[in-house]
Amino acid sequence: MTSSDRVDNDTFSIFTSSKTGHSMNSQASNHEGGSEMNKPSKHLQGSILSETPNVKWDDVAGLELAKSELQAAIIFALRFPQMFRDKRQVRPNILLYGPRGTGKSHLAKAVATEVNRTIFTLNIRQVISKWIGECEELIRQLFQVARDKKPSIIFLDEIDAISRDGSDTNSEHMRRIRTEFLFQVDDLANKNEGVLILAATNLPWDLDPPVRNRFRKRIHIPLPGQHSREELFKVHLGEMAPTLVDNKQVLDALARRTGGYSGSDIADLVQDALMTPVKGAHVATHIRKTRGRDGEWYTPRSPDAEGETPIQWNQVPGHQLKEPSLLFEDLCDAIKRTKPSISEEEVRKCVEWTQEYGTEGV
Image (cartoon, rainbow, N blue to C red):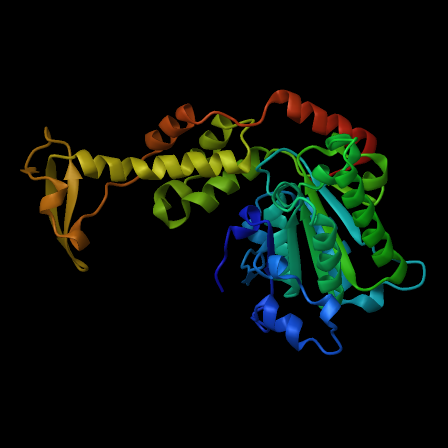
């Protein structure tokens, strides 16, 4: 299976298990008992992708409480429905909130991978800006398709865009969208149709009470702590810098230098650092020729080093140029160039909102 980042960028995408692997078009047309009314519109069909995420729980750094809550509320509910009976009921609607880039969408991918079920992702803000006048029908069809493919999960990103406190209160268009959304959520809850709703927002304080109260479980996804930042460096460096990844002191030093950084900030600075050896190879005027079991290699070197040959990268066979190793100093320089994207004010507001309405996810 291959992973994809399209869930963060596409207005409406669909994850399916590898056992199905069909496009939404064929699924809709082959659904037993499906009527023409329930088939997705052409606009909707053109916005759906079929993917098989491959994000394991270990790929999500930290957030142990959030993962535990999701495992109990979603994974157990789908895998072991017999456990949720009589007075023990799953909370079908869960809100993930916190600063940008803290892993909310990544958690949704991990859930989809773990349960091997269909998860539908809709970015509310993009839908509202892209399909003015058609959002109500799109939301209606989303919930209908989720019912048709139950048990399933709906993931609503940027849910604050649909809320009264986060939109134009005088817009009749927004009022209709909000009304349709609330109706569909209540209809699912009343009929217990095996569809769970997972939503995410960076602006939980923009949620008005009707929308907020539809999500009885609200989990704070904060900026990563010291240990989580160490894990993030390990994940993003991977096999590109094994000597650094295996050095606890290096990871500790990197994590201490990145307090206040989000997960996406760390991903960006690691990518910046990883390009340093490439840039060095591009401007190098001298190389060192070496032989090994895997063949002959040319490594860019400093011109003042002994025994180096004056030669530029464009004179070396493409498959024989080997970039220099990534250094700890390269990462430190990248940290200096990459500033945290989340303000202290955003962090403070999330903490205050958690104290009143939410649950910590770490």
